[in-house]
Figure 1 (tube, helix red, strand yellow):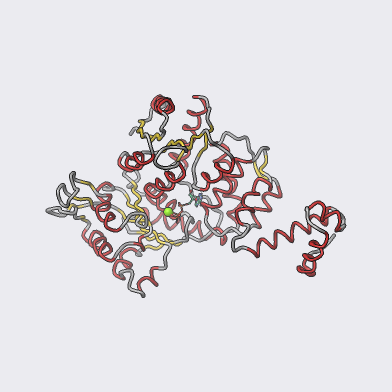
Figure 2: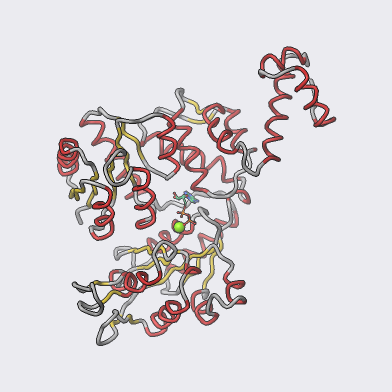
Length: 432
Ligand SMILES: Nc1ncnc2c1ncn2[C@@H]1O[C@H](COP(=O)(O)OP(=O)(O)OP(=O)(O)O)[C@@H](O)[C@H]1O
Ligand SMILES: [Mg+2]
């Protein structure tokens, strides 16, 4: 199957250059002149990647990326801009954008970039990296359940790899060559979610000028991922339950049910037991879904994976960003291992991506993570911030053989501040 790439740019020349590159590489180019048009096409055209400008009429690039993410989740995105500053890049990278290409660029670097994004996301995107015994066990279980058609409920906090695990199950199943379709129930308003999932017949309501095939039918033979199932309304929960029991869907306005063969994987980061107690989630649906629950744990509970994932993401992004980076300096490793990561792997991945982007040497240094310290300044982690401050003062005092005046000078603060801090920390600051 020929893969499609969606190109969004208001500049007619840039658009035709991008179109040419995309087509020469053997992909189908889906063109849009502005984000609003692009958002209409992104799902309908089943694109594998988006290439977008940042400064465009009707909607800016960042908003567009956020909107597109809501529709199609983890789709790789290449951002092209002439207005690039590091700050801008950082904003964009936070949205999990794959690549950042600055105008002007050569035809060659464009095709190389597209190539590496496609290679990564199409072959290697489904690898679950871990050295944690619990997760290893979980993957083994997932491999077993993949052999059946059982419904799977994937639990876990935001960004802990729920979708990755769902894809792993799909890829390990007999359904692997059939569609894997993800629907984010939280991103679609309830009245639209029903037609999204089950489709409708032409003329079934005002505005239904064409028949629409729902996601369940599109996933026939394959797997459907119902993301954030806890957000579904009671009505839709009842309809979903029927689909699971009868293995058939009703298009809105349809005359008879349509049989579907689809494995359902649902995810949630809500506590469904609690939702049931508070009558927001049907217990019978829960029992249907939770035949096989798999619970992912956050990064903060799998410290052994920090270095492993850091290396994995470092390799991935140095390839993509055309950087010759071979590893991390000791203080960078130290920083990564001692910093308080909330548990969201996407956030961790983005931090590594930014460091790869910023780094100017072969080894990523602690300084390349300075943005992370800035980002976290002022949020609720005052505990870890204090640790960092204490650490900094301790290290500086070590460097100056305990000379407070010199240390104050190096740190750009007054001697009194250093004394106050030392009093505040009490005996916790061992001076060499
Ligand atoms: N064990 C892992 N190995 C490699 N990459 C991982 C791993 N776990 C998560 N990731 C990466 O972290 C990112 C977030 O993972 P994913 O989208 O699967 O999480 P999620 O739980 O579905 O997130 P959300 O709650 O936001 O929907 C993805 O880019 C994914 O590839
Ligand atoms: Mg997800």
